[in-house]
Image (cartoon, rainbow, N blue to C red; front, side):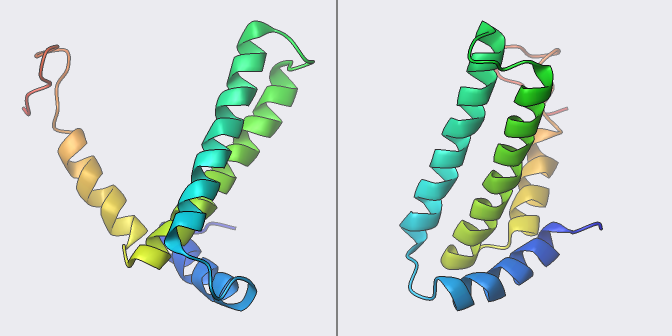
Amino acid sequence: MTLSLNQLQAEHQEWAEHNFPNQAEHEALLGLIEELGELAHAHLKYEQGIRGYDEEYYRVHASDAVGDIMIYLASYCNRCGFNLQMCMEETWRRVRERDWQADPRGGVSR
């Protein structure tokens, strides 16, 4: 199944309104931060080679954290009235114009 950011955001909004109708935007932000911490934890333990984080274990936990990050991001955008797809597209349009190889100090647009 392929799911666009717009679909994710729309489906999440319906789901969240049913399950968490009074959730404040800061709750989605805190969930997002928690999942980012889980991603960092998985990466750190894999890099350190401890706690059984072999590559397979790392990939399972890291990919789950990435998915959770996207869901919490959709939640945050819904609560704030942002269109996740549009935020990503507009920012990517600006970022992809930066050339850090040509200008390592400022990444001036091409």
